Length: 314
Image (tube, helix red, strand yellow):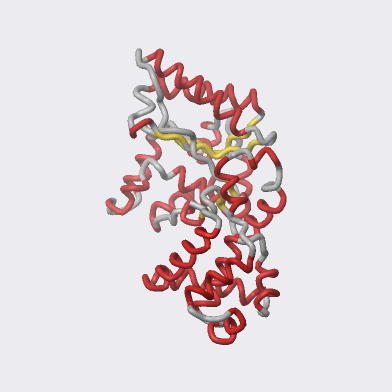
């Protein structure tokens, strides 16, 4: 996703939008990138893509520079068009791709869905918003060569089902999938995050990127984490499970170990003397408790700050 500098529009007319899509198609071809979803708004755009060659940086650099050059030339302006670097997330396809596609396709109407009496008006707004890949998902004759529709349509069961999927989002509302983003860069469940860390985070190319370095630095020795928890709770290590082994504290120690060490949930279970399922349940229960009780969230944040201070993690 890219947003205009200071929130300014990055598309001022349809010539801009047409040129943007032309340059997008050109860049997709050059870098062999697959495009699944796109939405162009006045001051930002969203893309859901797959980089078969792990060349996202090269693709976005060329694409953004070319469009910025066009925009400045076309409108006799100069300087930065975008608000900093593009924002990107690594997405667990099986779990989140379908939900993410709907959330992005609803972008032109999502903020106003609750204001409408029924779904008909936002549906007509979506139909009129031509700068989106949604039309190709709803009508075969409106497909565009540089967009791949097959994967999502197979996941949902065809165009008729995708249409129903979109309408359900208008009628019932949609949950924001970005609420589940972990480490600021990954949209996926705990197992997916663990696999990414194990298979990719040790590779030199990723370590050169600041946000990935932060993720690597977050792997803190389990004993440091346990020490921080016991200090804040005011107990000794050997009494942790005996006095605080259930309920809130079990969730806190399990979640912090998972987030800030390189342990899997099974490893955490072995360390704490409980089984894998208990670790998972404790972490899920903690998330619910923190949403309902500010004091639990405050306690968690206090321990988290102590952990970060040990290695000066900002």
